Length: 398
Ligand SMILES: Nc1ncnc2c1ncn2[C@@H]1O[C@H](COP(=O)(O)OP(=O)(O)OP(=O)(O)O)[C@@H](O)[C@H]1O
Ligand SMILES: [Mg+2]
Image 1 (cartoon, rainbow, N blue to C red):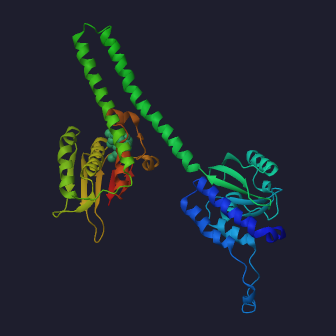
Image 2 (cartoon, protein in one colour):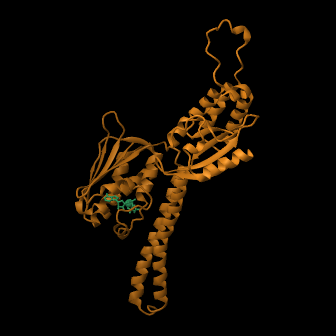
Image 3 (spheres, rainbow, N blue to C red):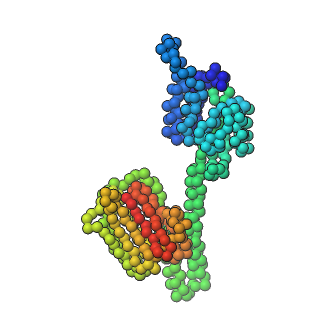
């Protein structure tokens, strides 16, 4: 490590600045970049003045300058390697050891990192001194996608910083967005195709058939209603997303709110032969929230319980305030329940246990996704318990 100690301070200072600028430009989380900058003074630390020497005679040897770099990178959650001009590892931070395993000091980086694209980029940077980057997917320990960058430190010393930035989350969100657009278009395409079919029939074979016309127009009206419901739900999801971080702060009394949702759904419940039983406390239960959004939450939960738990013939809506805790609302049905493997996915957009059964019940599969968004904004949680053959309980905890 002599080369480093000798040339050290200047190169390290440059390296520190370089890394801080690099991290900021790469939008590595501000906190991490902040930490790097906070550590920069350590790189500038002046040598102890000569006069102090006798007083601190047994002070340990001055620290290895590489220690400053080590501590600057140690807390980073991105894997970082310091390489010399030959591509041998001078230092790897704990995150790098966790992701790729330990490479002995002085061993070539290819001891652990085998992806040819990374090795090519490293080779190129070592040869030219120019920065390089590439993207890789690693299968172990869990599939991760990394943006890999290598930059040469400024100054005379010949060393390179190789950083792996985990972009798996960004990729996952990209995929979700594409899936979402595909799902939404698919949901709209089906009713649109059927509308086109009916219009052709009405203009052609059924032109003079009043009875068929009435029947087809009825179906068309249903399809159009379904499409506008879908569009309304999509818009309400996107509105909720926009204000996800704003916590609503009106005082809302849950007792009359739940009461009126039950009243409003009574006709639908009666249609499907379900009785809604409410168990509400006699005194107000106040939470901070948005009245319309909370109404939407309980409407969907109670409507689902009636629609999908129809066979159970009853739905219980219970509001309790456990001692010293926040209020809880549970909606319980005695229907067929949901098989375990579907439960964690129910709040995904467009997820339906049975697409046919949901469609026939005029569902869009967006209800629980909206519920989850609203509750997140209210800092409340949705717990789902379900047993096949015995029914489901959806509990909202504020
Ligand atoms: N109480 C329940 N019992 C059984 N299955 C349920 C229950 N609640 C929801 N599900 C299942 O979860 C799926 C998603 O529900 P969600 O409310 O998100 O959509 P939806 O009811 O189909 O459509 P929308 O709410 O937009 O009308 C439903 O299609 C159904 O398969
Ligand atoms: Mg629903």
